[in-house]
Amino acid sequence: PKVIYVGSDGPEYTVDATVGDSVMAAAVRNGVPGIVAECGGNQSCATCHVWVREEFAPLVGPPGDMEDDLLDLAVAERRDTSRLSCQIRLTRELDGLTVDIPPEQP
Ligand code: FES
Image (cartoon, rainbow, N blue to C red):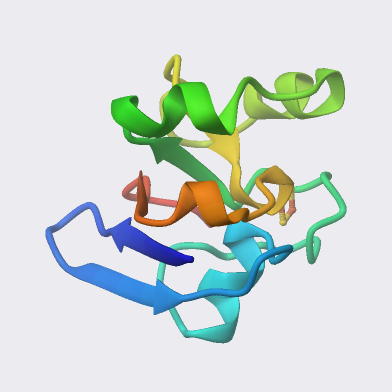
């Protein structure tokens, strides 16, 4: 599936990802800036925060409990569509998934 990452100041990155990849791993492997993923996907850093585009939100679903707590600690504003990208697994149905990268993610 393709994933499109939209940077806060405009640039878009389209990545060809593999089913089963996380949205975070696909970004890191392809050098998409702004997804820091300090903890490497262990659901403990919140530096992989993204905003899922409205039209994909129902497909992606809501965050889990631990993720939900961690999202409150994310540096950028939390929105209804906030997710930790390390917790989104790619499926074929998610082809074209578009996420916005928050402006700062130390
Ligand atoms: Fe650390 Fe997702 S990579 S919480």
